[in-house]
Length: 270
Image (cartoon, rainbow, N blue to C red; front, side, top):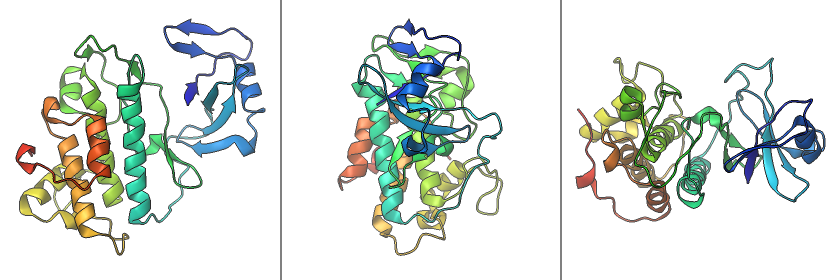
Protein backbone atom coordinates (compact mmCIF):
# COMPACT_ATOMS: atom_id res chain seq x y z
CA UNK A 1 0.00 0.00 0.00
CA UNK A 2 1.29 3.46 -0.88
CA UNK A 3 0.86 6.64 1.10
CA UNK A 4 -0.61 9.59 -0.79
CA UNK A 5 0.69 13.08 -0.18
CA UNK A 6 -1.95 15.75 -0.49
CA UNK A 7 -1.17 18.78 -2.64
CA UNK A 8 -3.07 22.00 -3.26
CA UNK A 9 -6.84 22.10 -3.61
CA UNK A 10 -6.51 24.36 -6.65
CA UNK A 11 -4.24 22.14 -8.73
CA UNK A 12 -4.90 18.83 -10.37
CA UNK A 13 -1.31 18.18 -11.45
CA UNK A 14 0.89 15.32 -10.30
CA UNK A 15 4.48 16.21 -9.45
CA UNK A 16 6.94 13.36 -9.67
CA UNK A 17 10.36 13.22 -7.99
CA UNK A 18 11.92 9.84 -8.48
CA UNK A 19 9.43 7.32 -7.09
CA UNK A 20 7.64 9.95 -5.00
CA UNK A 21 4.42 11.46 -6.35
CA UNK A 22 2.31 14.37 -5.18
CA UNK A 23 -1.44 14.17 -5.73
CA UNK A 24 -3.95 16.98 -5.75
CA UNK A 25 -6.64 17.30 -3.12
CA UNK A 26 -9.24 16.61 -5.81
CA UNK A 27 -7.61 13.30 -6.75
CA UNK A 28 -7.30 12.13 -3.15
CA UNK A 29 -10.87 13.17 -2.40
CA UNK A 30 -12.09 11.13 -5.36
CA UNK A 31 -9.95 8.15 -4.35
CA UNK A 32 -11.46 8.10 -0.85
CA UNK A 33 -15.03 8.92 -1.94
CA UNK A 34 -14.77 12.37 -0.40
CA UNK A 35 -13.05 10.97 2.72
CA UNK A 36 -16.07 8.84 3.52
CA UNK A 37 -16.19 7.47 7.11
CA UNK A 38 -16.40 3.91 5.76
CA UNK A 39 -12.86 4.35 4.39
CA UNK A 40 -11.36 5.40 7.71
CA UNK A 41 -8.55 3.01 8.75
CA UNK A 42 -6.91 4.82 11.64
CA UNK A 43 -6.18 8.02 13.50
CA UNK A 44 -2.87 9.63 14.40
CA UNK A 45 -1.97 12.65 16.47
CA UNK A 46 -2.44 15.02 13.52
CA UNK A 47 -5.51 13.60 11.81
CA UNK A 48 -7.41 10.67 10.31
CA UNK A 49 -6.08 8.14 7.78
CA UNK A 50 -8.33 6.88 4.96
CA UNK A 51 -7.92 4.07 2.45
CA UNK A 52 -8.58 4.83 -1.21
CA UNK A 53 -8.10 3.72 -4.80
CA UNK A 54 -6.67 5.95 -7.56
CA UNK A 55 -8.02 5.97 -11.12
CA UNK A 56 -5.28 3.57 -12.23
CA UNK A 57 -6.26 1.05 -9.53
CA UNK A 58 -3.41 1.83 -7.13
CA UNK A 59 -4.43 1.48 -3.49
CA UNK A 60 -3.37 4.37 -1.26
CA UNK A 61 -3.62 5.51 2.33
CA UNK A 62 -4.32 9.22 2.76
CA UNK A 63 -3.70 11.13 5.96
CA UNK A 64 -5.70 14.31 6.49
CA UNK A 65 -4.17 16.99 8.68
CA UNK A 66 -6.44 18.55 11.25
CA UNK A 67 -5.77 22.14 12.23
CA UNK A 68 -7.76 21.68 15.41
CA UNK A 69 -5.96 18.59 16.65
CA UNK A 70 -2.78 18.54 18.71
CA UNK A 71 -0.21 15.77 18.50
CA UNK A 72 -1.16 13.01 20.92
CA UNK A 73 -4.27 14.80 22.24
CA UNK A 74 -6.84 12.45 20.75
CA UNK A 75 -6.20 9.22 22.56
CA UNK A 76 -8.30 6.56 24.22
CA UNK A 77 -7.06 4.14 26.84
CA UNK A 78 -7.52 0.58 25.61
CA UNK A 79 -6.46 -2.49 27.55
CA UNK A 80 -4.29 -4.72 25.38
CA UNK A 81 -3.54 -8.31 26.31
CA UNK A 82 -0.19 -9.88 25.47
CA UNK A 83 -1.48 -11.54 22.30
CA UNK A 84 -2.44 -8.15 20.86
CA UNK A 85 0.75 -6.44 22.01
CA UNK A 86 2.86 -9.19 20.48
CA UNK A 87 0.93 -8.94 17.21
CA UNK A 88 1.50 -5.17 17.12
CA UNK A 89 5.26 -5.69 17.55
CA UNK A 90 5.39 -8.33 14.83
CA UNK A 91 3.20 -6.40 12.40
CA UNK A 92 5.21 -3.19 12.82
CA UNK A 93 8.46 -5.13 12.36
CA UNK A 94 7.17 -6.63 9.11
CA UNK A 95 6.16 -3.17 7.89
CA UNK A 96 9.61 -1.74 8.59
CA UNK A 97 11.30 -4.74 6.98
CA UNK A 98 9.22 -4.05 3.86
CA UNK A 99 10.31 -0.39 3.79
CA UNK A 100 13.97 -1.25 4.35
CA UNK A 101 14.42 -4.37 2.25
CA UNK A 102 11.59 -4.83 -0.27
CA UNK A 103 11.24 -1.33 -1.73
CA UNK A 104 13.56 0.14 -4.36
CA UNK A 105 14.97 2.48 -3.30
CA UNK A 106 14.50 1.59 0.40
CA UNK A 107 12.84 4.03 2.78
CA UNK A 108 14.06 5.04 6.24
CA UNK A 109 11.06 6.30 8.22
CA UNK A 110 13.00 8.41 10.79
CA UNK A 111 10.08 8.83 13.19
CA UNK A 112 9.01 5.41 14.43
CA UNK A 113 7.12 5.97 17.67
CA UNK A 114 3.90 4.91 19.36
CA UNK A 115 1.76 7.75 17.98
CA UNK A 116 2.81 6.89 14.41
CA UNK A 117 1.64 3.30 14.66
CA UNK A 118 -2.03 3.29 13.70
CA UNK A 119 -4.31 0.41 14.73
CA UNK A 120 -7.37 -0.69 12.77
CA UNK A 121 -10.49 -2.13 14.41
CA UNK A 122 -8.76 -5.51 14.66
CA UNK A 123 -5.65 -3.91 16.25
CA UNK A 124 -3.59 -4.61 13.15
CA UNK A 125 -0.76 -2.03 13.03
CA UNK A 126 -0.10 0.32 10.13
CA UNK A 127 2.94 2.59 10.00
CA UNK A 128 1.88 6.20 9.49
CA UNK A 129 3.27 9.72 9.08
CA UNK A 130 6.01 9.53 6.45
CA UNK A 131 6.72 13.26 6.69
CA UNK A 132 10.35 12.71 7.73
CA UNK A 133 11.02 9.63 5.60
CA UNK A 134 14.13 9.45 3.42
CA UNK A 135 14.75 7.45 0.26
CA UNK A 136 17.91 5.44 0.88
CA UNK A 137 19.86 4.16 -2.14
CA UNK A 138 21.60 0.84 -1.55
CA UNK A 139 24.95 2.08 -2.86
CA UNK A 140 25.65 4.38 0.11
CA UNK A 141 26.42 3.51 3.72
CA UNK A 142 24.73 6.46 5.41
CA UNK A 143 23.15 9.86 4.89
CA UNK A 144 24.33 12.95 6.75
CA UNK A 145 21.22 14.96 7.49
CA UNK A 146 19.59 17.34 9.93
CA UNK A 147 18.42 15.57 13.06
CA UNK A 148 14.66 15.10 13.01
CA UNK A 149 12.43 12.84 15.04
CA UNK A 150 11.29 12.41 18.62
CA UNK A 151 13.50 12.52 21.70
CA UNK A 152 13.64 9.16 23.43
CA UNK A 153 13.52 7.22 20.16
CA UNK A 154 16.63 8.58 18.44
CA UNK A 155 19.67 6.36 17.88
CA UNK A 156 22.85 7.81 19.45
CA UNK A 157 24.85 8.02 16.21
CA UNK A 158 21.97 9.91 14.58
CA UNK A 159 21.22 12.17 17.54
CA UNK A 160 24.86 13.12 18.13
CA UNK A 161 26.19 13.30 14.58
CA UNK A 162 23.30 13.32 12.14
CA UNK A 163 24.49 10.00 10.66
CA UNK A 164 21.40 8.24 9.32
CA UNK A 165 21.19 4.56 8.38
CA UNK A 166 18.40 1.99 8.44
CA UNK A 167 19.68 1.03 11.88
CA UNK A 168 18.22 4.31 13.24
CA UNK A 169 14.75 2.90 12.57
CA UNK A 170 15.80 -0.37 14.22
CA UNK A 171 16.79 1.55 17.36
CA UNK A 172 13.47 3.43 17.42
CA UNK A 173 11.59 0.16 16.96
CA UNK A 174 13.42 -1.32 19.95
CA UNK A 175 12.28 1.58 22.11
CA UNK A 176 8.75 1.09 20.78
CA UNK A 177 8.81 -2.56 21.88
CA UNK A 178 9.75 -1.47 25.40
CA UNK A 179 6.84 0.97 25.47
CA UNK A 180 4.42 -1.71 24.26
CA UNK A 181 5.60 -4.17 26.90
CA UNK A 182 5.74 -1.65 29.74
CA UNK A 183 2.73 0.50 28.82
CA UNK A 184 4.89 3.54 29.56
CA UNK A 185 6.39 6.46 27.68
CA UNK A 186 10.06 6.38 26.70
CA UNK A 187 10.37 10.12 27.32
CA UNK A 188 9.42 10.17 30.99
CA UNK A 189 12.69 10.85 32.87
CA UNK A 190 12.02 8.87 36.05
CA UNK A 191 11.80 5.06 36.32
CA UNK A 192 12.58 2.73 39.17
CA UNK A 193 12.54 5.64 41.61
CA UNK A 194 15.53 7.32 39.94
CA UNK A 195 16.13 9.79 37.11
CA UNK A 196 16.46 7.41 34.15
CA UNK A 197 14.83 7.13 30.76
CA UNK A 198 12.88 3.95 30.05
CA UNK A 199 15.71 2.41 28.00
CA UNK A 200 18.29 3.13 30.70
CA UNK A 201 16.06 1.60 33.34
CA UNK A 202 15.46 -1.56 31.29
CA UNK A 203 19.21 -1.93 30.69
CA UNK A 204 19.73 -1.76 34.44
CA UNK A 205 17.01 -4.37 35.04
CA UNK A 206 18.65 -6.64 32.48
CA UNK A 207 21.97 -6.47 34.31
CA UNK A 208 20.15 -7.25 37.56
CA UNK A 209 18.16 -10.13 36.05
CA UNK A 210 14.87 -8.38 36.92
CA UNK A 211 13.31 -7.68 33.50
CA UNK A 212 9.79 -8.63 34.59
CA UNK A 213 9.73 -5.55 36.84
CA UNK A 214 9.25 -3.34 33.76
CA UNK A 215 6.17 -5.20 32.45
CA UNK A 216 2.91 -3.23 32.43
CA UNK A 217 1.12 -3.95 35.74
CA UNK A 218 -2.17 -4.03 33.80
CA UNK A 219 -0.89 -6.99 31.76
CA UNK A 220 -2.31 -10.14 33.34
CA UNK A 221 -1.71 -13.81 32.64
CA UNK A 222 1.15 -13.23 30.20
CA UNK A 223 3.74 -15.89 29.20
CA UNK A 224 6.80 -14.75 31.15
CA UNK A 225 9.43 -16.40 28.95
CA UNK A 226 7.92 -14.94 25.79
CA UNK A 227 7.73 -11.44 27.26
CA UNK A 228 11.33 -11.60 28.55
CA UNK A 229 12.45 -12.75 25.10
CA UNK A 230 10.64 -9.78 23.50
CA UNK A 231 12.37 -7.36 25.90
CA UNK A 232 15.76 -8.87 25.05
CA UNK A 233 15.04 -8.46 21.33
CA UNK A 234 14.35 -4.78 22.07
CA UNK A 235 17.75 -4.56 23.76
CA UNK A 236 19.40 -6.08 20.69
CA UNK A 237 17.70 -3.38 18.60
CA UNK A 238 18.84 -0.55 20.89
CA UNK A 239 22.53 -1.42 21.16
CA UNK A 240 24.67 1.71 21.17
CA UNK A 241 26.78 0.59 18.20
CA UNK A 242 24.65 0.58 15.04
CA UNK A 243 26.51 -2.31 13.41
CA UNK A 244 25.58 -4.56 16.33
CA UNK A 245 21.86 -4.04 15.81
CA UNK A 246 19.98 -6.60 13.71
CA UNK A 247 18.28 -5.78 10.41
CA UNK A 248 14.51 -5.56 10.47
CA UNK A 249 14.17 -8.90 8.64
CA UNK A 250 16.29 -10.46 11.39
CA UNK A 251 14.04 -8.81 13.98
CA UNK A 252 10.97 -10.29 12.27
CA UNK A 253 12.62 -13.69 12.41
CA UNK A 254 13.51 -13.32 16.09
CA UNK A 255 9.97 -12.25 16.97
CA UNK A 256 8.34 -15.00 14.92
CA UNK A 257 10.52 -17.99 15.79
CA UNK A 258 11.36 -19.41 19.18
CA UNK A 259 15.05 -19.66 18.34
CA UNK A 260 17.64 -19.14 21.05
CA UNK A 261 19.02 -15.60 21.30
CA UNK A 262 22.80 -15.30 21.36
CA UNK A 263 23.11 -13.03 24.38
CA UNK A 264 26.89 -13.08 24.11
CA UNK A 265 26.38 -10.66 21.22
CA UNK A 266 24.26 -8.34 23.37
CA UNK A 267 26.35 -5.45 24.63
CA UNK A 268 24.35 -3.39 27.11
CA UNK A 269 25.99 -0.08 28.14
CA UNK A 270 26.42 0.58 31.82
